[in-house]
Length: 120
Image (cartoon, rainbow, N blue to C red; front, side):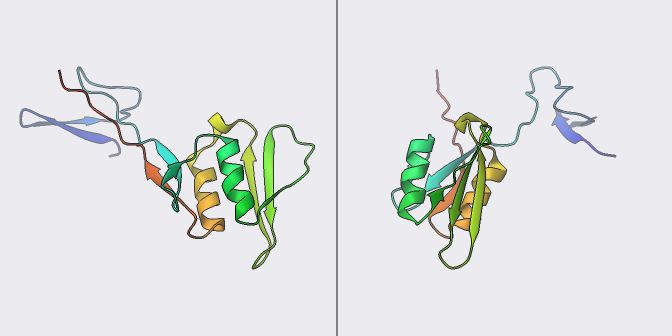
């Protein structure tokens, strides 16, 4: 059986598709949001301007591309490396972030976005 087990008042209930079938006051489970962080300064990367500043300093170059839906970067130091990202920074997904991390060694990391709860 696949799904998520929900325990309430000692009773277990299997929710087969928690994204489509939340129960009562229980919010559907969502994976944590991720953010790309430049490790040297602990800076969260929130735009292509910030990202490109860091990439260019690491020897990356922006490729000329006719594809308007993507941005592409190339680096030939220590072997050929290539990164392809969506043209719209808001469409950057976790897989793109990890691609940057893997190809830039120790310069970046991906972290969970911390949610700040307000107490009343």
